[in-house]
Image (cartoon, rainbow, N blue to C red; front, side, top):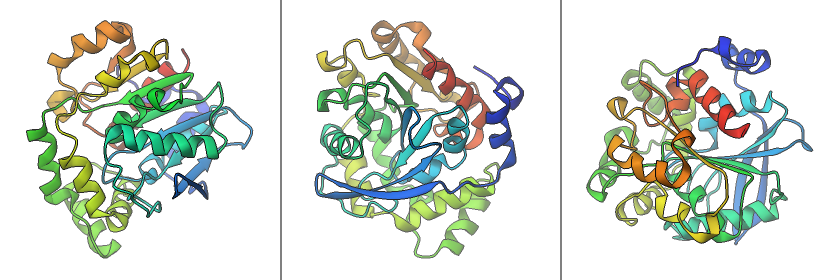
Length: 289
């Protein structure tokens, strides 16, 4: 899929083009003994759409797509996962299904466990989202954004990736990330810098080092609990850093249908940063089904 802002609804395109950060509304809800922090955009009573970030990121990675998706009339909620962002408590629940159980408890406590709930998860968030049906949350639509289907040898390298190291000060983080990622907008640099300053390193390392091979969530999607949950894959381009290789696609297409797998040509593992229009278009296509 390719797209530009001209292909999007006018209200959505306006948000993406403005590059003005809408901080949304912060709230904290305690569930499973964890004070989950989240950001909301849109009207409180509108249809809920939950966004779940990946490892070493935070809810702020959705700083642009969150308000853009809210411009479609949705109530968009982006949650900080345990050990990330402002959700400071981590209970060593780094296994995908354990994290999904905690997130499911928060979904219920936050009043989001409704029949019309839609969920988008990116990377680790996609692995968590894939396990939510086993935890009793069956969304109306489930979208996995570049769920990694890679061996342990590759995913574990991120634990020692210098670009993912934590920082004490925002200024240093912003300077280094800006230099290393000239194609990123200032908003994306700031969001990632903030996430790395807030990060619980032990939590991130456990996620990366103690989950073995990552299968893109395929095992959990094939579980009976996920049967008949409309599910989509929106992946980055493996040639540009996407972590769902071509060789793994047949298994996903056999389970979900080939028409439920979308590839964003030229997009990396986190396409919401560098390809916001294409990513938004793909998500809206999946969420409209």
